[in-house]
Length: 128
Image (cartoon, rainbow, N blue to C red; front, side, top):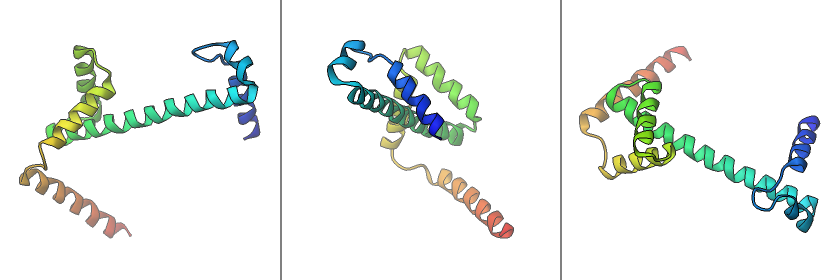
């Protein structure tokens, strides 16, 4: 683990700040610079996790509604993204928001999901 952290320290030491390069490192000092670079990385990773979550939600809606595979749902979202020149996460977020605005699913759709969940629970109970 310590070799991993040492490698991360070297990577941060060798990084340049996206805005000011080496001048930022000299102005704030090496420790503060390292903290700033790591904070930017954490922000980027947080955005990436959120993007994955909303893309997964959009894929799930498409899978449930149209019976698509996960790959097919992703390709459909990707085509929409490319066609509109909009980031995939933004398309997915707008899609999920609009579906939510329409309210709960129709009773028949809820019945299907309930039956599937009950079947999964019954199978789990038989195994344990």
